[in-house]
Image (cartoon, rainbow, N blue to C red; front, side, top):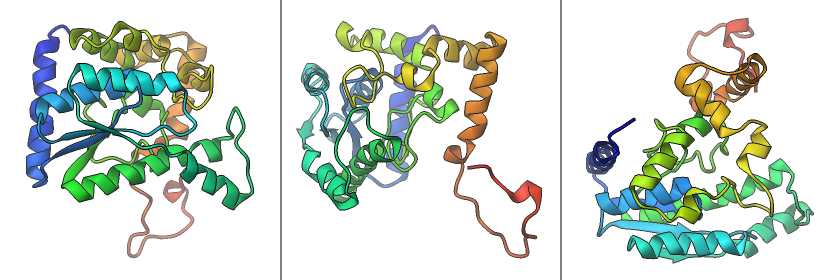
Length: 254
């Protein structure tokens, strides 16, 4: 994509129309200190300068992530609030008889984005806003997000852009270089990165998504990830009236 000015305006117009169509007033979104949420924050502030709310929701998070989120919010005059979720998350751990450790097992790690989702929808309903997510096309394609967590949103304005393209858009929007060059991460523990968890670099993934190119072993891995996470991109399976049971075509692999 060459014309980022045009793309910025296209996304902003789409956000405005979606909010208007829902008879809502504005948008609420997360600010994590990462590039995707920062781009969403800037675009949302352009679309709704008086009705945008960024929520910074640390949960045993790295201090640098909160500092980066505040940096972006203050540079672009994005209204924001900070709520620590440490005590809420710790209540879950106590309830389940678990303790906080690094790295977190996936069932415990996924609680965090699901708590955040509940906070977003509290403010959305309170203010008559929609929840705006930051999932990009690279993550959406291979299912690298938490079902009913960061995937639980009303709008996904970046779902058509790969991580590579979002970096280009971020440069156009004049995001801080430190944010653009920061290794993509959920920030759950020191040294955690998206690429380590996925087991494949974004450059390789985006090359396949955009052009269908890559090493055979990389393509095979990406295709397995797509197949394994298909349920995340669909509504829950429903039993229709009169549908025969236990037919192969009616069975999904979860």
